[in-house]
Image (cartoon, rainbow, N blue to C red; front, side):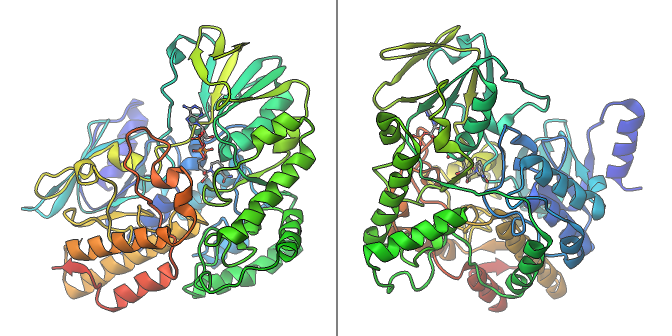
Length: 546
Ligand code: NAP
């Protein structure tokens, strides 16, 4: 029996869990899609691996995000692991865009199918990780008193895992129920006959609002910034849909391309600006089709204002066509940033919800929120009596989960201090000064742009291939060169600056969190998968291994 198995058996016997003091080859923090796959691959390499997960189950973001309407914004056939042909054949999604319970079941199925649960210690939050140069090991500590050492530490802590709880005056006083979409209760929440408010109109709010409106007696939506949203046109999946997707997935698996929406293709900068009516017709086609395809309408939609402006006007025109009240339609129409440079929302009946007589939009730009009271919310001009308040206010994205742990490199420097002016990584995978610490979909990689499961797979496969190569060569320590990291981050910034992405106050650049440095974090340049594969082929160029 391994030490972990002994500990787990003891837990079962005693109904409590003793802390673990143990040595492993690798520790994986987080058991979402990135962490679960990392655990699987590391075990396949023959490493003694332990996973540590704050939640009581696998699933990561899909474990926590149980709000009404929570659903994937990438078609489920593609929002799946590609690494196991058997898994691809066995699992049958029921809808074009899977809802949270089905995605969670998928994550659970993978954990069971590949027998991964016994390697994961649940309800265990990592508090610190410290590199010891003398022993060449990480020491990881948890909130349960565990002290685990490992040669390699893989942070699969997710990019959207630390909820942003806004500092609203008076929030503590509110006597009704308060929910955050990113930390939804596991028990059924009923809004029946209740007066409910939602604060926030990003992807989470846009998904939750139509369903909360169905249940509540009154719904008030407090909006600070309107979002571009396109219809999902969700539908049951047919066998023909499944059969048609398989060759596309198999081809993707073999290629080094990253063809998902949100990326800027290599021909973006030379592409012509099509005539307005040509653009409009294409947007209409993609609107009718549903989903995020609008971002692939033209190669330069995310680089050319002339193209993007027409797309914005197209969506505003749709909003005016759906929302009957002119002032509400106007308030719901984004006007001051391009389409697609904040994650585009994909909805079911979002705009139409505002035609319901018991639903009201409050534009916080016109009518700022003054305070939350014991019984509701007061704006500059009105009071709203409420029974429940839903915060759909997003996340401390991309760096929040890493900053929440005390991660220290060899010279004692904390990652938080090292990133005081913004995150810095080499390829979004490693940080200089923090040897043998890998980040899955870290800042500086495409990560949240596009399909995150594919981004996780790509990183896990790169990391495990790297460790395999090191083992073959008898090497045990890897760290990026500071110069390689610097020039990579300059390239990440340059890639973003050549696009329209920086033109919005998005969480991509930390703009949603007060005091967070403004650094554009995801990599939006071209050919990322190809590039990191080449770097590996060139003997891990930019890394020092010994
Ligand atoms: P978000 O996009 O950051 O949206 C948060 C919303 O809350 C924004 O409208 C924001 O307004 C508002 N807000 C924040 N603080 C506020 C305050 N103090 N007062 C008033 N309003 C405030 O967060 P999210 O909707 O949770 O989505 C985050 C990301 O998660 C998405 O972009 C997406 O990548 C992912 N996600 C995906 C899905 C899916 O797959 N379908 C679903 C949900 C989430 P401002 O814009 O003015 O800051």
